[in-house]
View (cartoon, rainbow, N blue to C red):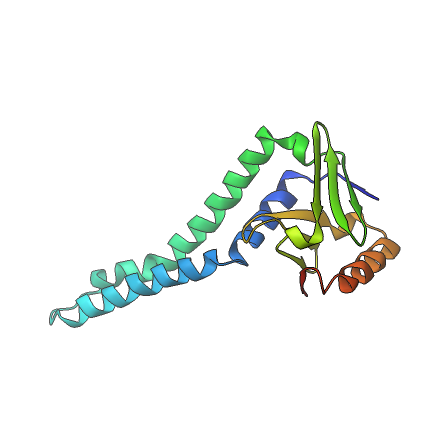
Length: 164
């Protein structure tokens, strides 16, 4: 059994990571490429180009950065409204199921019903859907717990997709 309390920063970072490591990033890349290609085509038709014509392309990194920070802020706001979902949580993991318990919350899933498990440098992300994951913060685990979880997750490869 693992006991954790996640802070707003960890929830925001891991949620943005989970969102961008899923299919959402492909949609975002497609939209950005479509806009950039459209701008290039429009600019190529103009014989009198000025620096101001490239303002949109120059501002694109700022827009992406804004989206990133907006999402983090949104997840932090969600955390403040639903902090009980992230405080004093216990996770029970075995070969058959994943269980999350907290204040007024008991969620139990068979491994086969979950999408995947992804191990990052900082977290274990247990995906319920392609864009939502439960977070186990490695910084709050002992070395033996990390080893046990890695062993457990590796033994589940026939039940759920494991991504390292």
